[in-house]
Length: 305
Image (cartoon, rainbow, N blue to C red):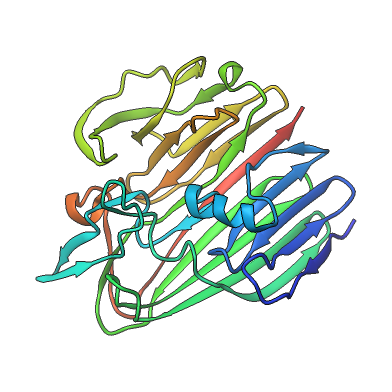
């Protein structure tokens, strides 16, 4: 069966692409950083996204739900860093602790490059081009996002980044989805952690230690806002109504940020290619030379019970 696709064009932030059939509904918001804000399979809500109204916009601004994270995931201390002898100042969008948070494209408008639906898969390609005017990251780049959604609700998100300028730039990549859970304490989380990065009160990493987590454990009453380096680039999450597996291979180290919001109705499982404050601590940080490109793909396999 082919998917149906509807595109709203009210010329506002809530314009979105709705992909659906009898068993699946997905909504992607090009003007909110190309983020996916809905994934429902067999009437089971998987992604904790925003509502399609002003309250939803306020929610996105506060939580960065499903945001695409580039050129850095997580935080940069004071929004300040030095690169190749030049000091840069990013916008401080976490003023309570004076950090820059979650990159510079989470609130950018992406163009719809293509939408293609075939039997059992729908592929959407979104593109953002920077003209070098972003405060603190004055580089020319193209970021292309490809969402491929299958009939089972499984998702593939591919990042393609191209340096279109004449200068190199530092970068990392990440994704910030929240996954719903009707009873988070009963959910099982699995990932093969190698190291744990403890943070200070500003949520900036200050110490690296060997992880003492079991590879698989029940969440119970535990709370998380922590980064882990992984032995293998994968993570599994099992709730009462569905299970999912994330795989996010990369040639070098990969990282996972785990966050439990205070309401405990969902959990953020954030694949990353570097840790917080990477522009300063260099952990996982990459450099893209002029004319060069890089890509990264996150695979999410889903099983609704």
